[in-house]
Image 1 (cartoon, rainbow, N blue to C red):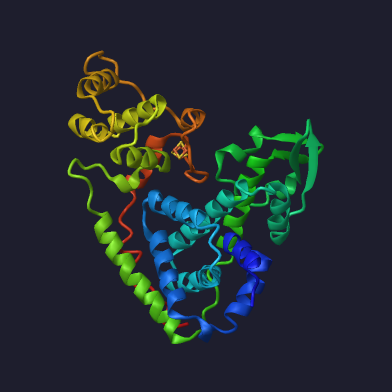
Image 2 (cartoon, rainbow, N blue to C red):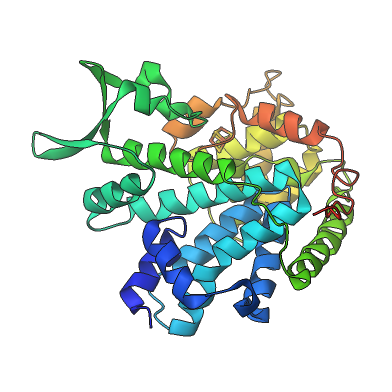
Length: 358
Ligand code: SF4
């Protein structure tokens, strides 16, 4: 019987040595993997198959919202989910899915780490599992983490805030405040999980391959539905995470603050979404006033002023407190949209690829 506290830790950090020990007890052999775990693993693969960052963000938020649940069955299933999902992904041989899964685990790690009460101590525990050595430095009563430069650069850093030019380098070490240290460790988790995929599935029971084929069928359905774009030709699934969040909030009736409205409006204007469709988006806010909305949109789009406003770059969106992703790998939200909307359909790549040789 694995103690609940250990299961809760393992659920948050499923790649950790504590989680591996727990899984060995919960699932002593592959034949012990039951249907609820397989179903959950297929659902997780579906989350990774979605091209919309919103879907993965929702997964992180739901996972985090269940952090205090202590039912052993629920925890055991979630802890076992990580290795079983890796097996399913390994049968599918799809690097895009692997990358999204690793990124999702990095995002989960960040979400949990920054919210830990004993953040530095847990950070050090998680870092140890990744073979990271770090020291604690206390400056002005603030704890910081010190990592050697070679170690800091040991894996690719996709988060712009982690670029070396933005860091404090002292005597060959990087000194990170806690939030940045959590971002960096999340990148380490992302990289480490990506490196661990695919696992060797030779000799694995047939039911695991069948589950992978089920997952592939579901992925094909997702691809078909995602090729349907808005009537105006705007592809919602290509929106960057920051705009997905704002778009989702305003269309759910949330009253966005001024800068959030500005960023969203200029994004939609420059995508470009038809003017009346943008008015329609803003009409969903509960404090909607058509006259004021049209006045501002006419101004921002240049209809009334003759000057069309540009969409702010990521650095500005970040200053507005609206950047929510570490891994977009762009400097401008419109760059993200163009990159994602120009990607060819993944349908051909996602045709069944279960390796029959293995
Ligand atoms: S990196 Fe840029 S595009 Fe991505 S969420 Fe942040 S502001 Fe938006």
